[in-house]
Length: 349
Image (cartoon, rainbow, N blue to C red; front, side, top):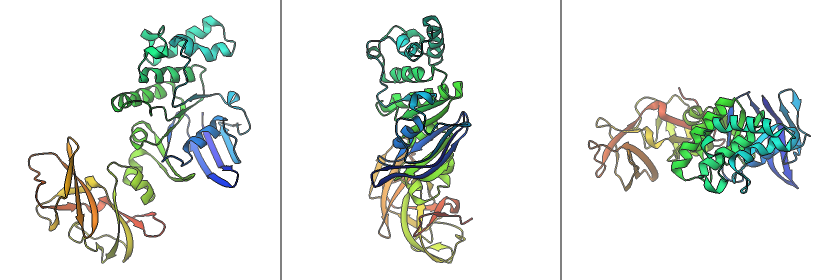
C-alpha cells in the first residue's frame, strides 16, 4: 500500500507544529521519522493514523483519500511505546482480540492469530500472559496483534524505548524480519538514530515540524542535506566549525587535507566526522590528546586545535600511541562543506 502525505499542516491555536510536510512512501517500504523530542514526528504519525485531526493537507492510502476517515476505517496497525496489551489475556487471546472485535468466528480468529504468532516466533508462549514475557516478547505480541487483521499500513511509535540496549539490538532485527515477511508499508517513529539507521529503507529527518532531509541511511550519513542532518546522524557527533577557505585550503588546517578543495574562497562551515581522521606519519598536522575515551574496538580522542575542539576516533591497536602528539590526515572526500548562512551542504568534487 502506497502512502502519500501531501502538504500536511498541524496547528495548535496559533502555534504551527507541522509545516507543509510532503512524503511519499512506497508499498512495502519501512520509513523512519527521526528527530529530537518536539520535532513533530509522533504528531505526524498520529495524523496518518487518524488519531489526530489535521489542520490542512491530504493523506492518501493508495488511491483512497483517508484524510477524513476515522482510525478504525483506515486499515492500520498501531503499536505504541507501552504496547497496551491486555494483562489478563494470554498471548493467543491478545492477538485474537482485534478479529473477535470484528465479529470473526472464534475458529477463524484462532487460526489467523496462530499464523501470525508463529511468524513472530512466539508459538511456545501462547498461553502466557504479558507479565510473564520479556519486553521484547511483549513488543512482538503487540506487533502481531497490529498485523493480524492483515493491515495495509503499520505505524510504530517509539516501540523500542522501553528495552535495554542488548534487547533493543535483537528486537530491531526482529521488527525488520517481520516487516519484510509480511511486506507491510511501515512508518517507524524514533528519536534514536541508531534504531533508524538499522531498520529503515529510508529516513526522514525532522526539525520543528519541517523535513530537513530524506534518504537511505548511508546517504544521510555520507551526503547529508545540511549541517543539522550531519550533526544528528552519526555517533560521536561530527566536528563542525566555521573557517575560511582560500586557494582550496582551510585556514588553520592546511596540512590536514591533501588535495585542493574545489570551491570559491570565502567563509564556510566545515564538517569532518571523527572517524575520518587517520594517523599519518607523513603528515605535518599534529594533534595532542587532552583526554580519551575507550570505546572497545576504537578510542575516542578529545583535542583542541586552533581553538577548535575536535573529536577523533582511531582503532584501539598497539601501533597507535595516543599518549603523545601524533600527526593526522583526512581524505579530501571526507570533508563536508556547508554554506555559512543556510547550512546547506555544498558539493566540492
